[in-house]
Amino acid sequence: MSYINNIKMFVRVVELGSLSAAGRDLRASPAVASNRIKELEKHLGVRLFNRTTRKLTTTEHGRIFYGGALKLLEALNDAEAAIAEVSRNPKGSIHVTAPLGIGRRLIAPLIPIFHDKYPEIEVRLRLSDRMVDITTEALDVAFKLGQIPDSNFRIRGIIDCRRVLAAAPSYLAKRSTPRKPNDLLSEGHDCLLLRFPGSTQYNWELQTPSGVRKLGVHGPFESDDGDVLTDWALGGHGIVNKPWFEICDHLANGDLVEVLPDTPPVTTNLAIIYPHKRLQDPKVRLFIDFMAENIRKHLTEVMEA
Image (cartoon, rainbow, N blue to C red; front, top):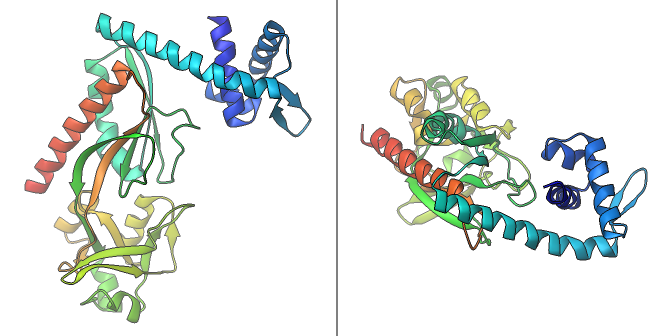
């Protein structure tokens, strides 16, 4: 397997742009990463990278070999997946990412249950409200809440999620309660925004009798962590746009009050995104099926309670 490991290291160095980053990704030291590349170059009899003190770039041979290496690794994964399917004993690691709120409330609690059912499968969960590149970061599964752009990935819808605007009673007492969507702008309300490169949450889409109304809202605070926005709202610092299930307890106990209930935000879909492969890894399929079923069941029960 040393030759295969060398090829895996080569592919990750190309994709991540450095030996140290590839080493971290594959749980190897920079020295080990460097040695694997040297062994591969010695075996092939060509230089795969041009190295300087600041930059690592692929040679022409490296670019040619990269395409073949990807096909080789995919074929190997397909073969291993076929064997696991036959043996009905899937094993290995699954790399998963999800937004913070969804990950903490819905996904993380289910992972130990999944592991109890499939003890040979390890789950590596990464939580972030930022956009992630599934391919570059070698992820198997990504959970997404909201509009999904056209892509080459497969999409498994789970459930439509109601969204609400909400604020603390103290904020509304101080700043007044909006009665119609345009009040958010004309009365200068502080809207708490989820912002990061590629985010579109500065445009709030509200359902009105005349159709969807898009508002370019603004406010003094923004963060790339959705739970920070909730904390600010609870502290009376503005109006937040959140999935209902994330703040339903705060609404029930009166810490937050729904704003503009007659013109709520557009419902968004919770979905699972995963790479399109001719032969899907059985352990990934098991994880997707398990999560989709249990998340849908949980949210349905919460919404009907």
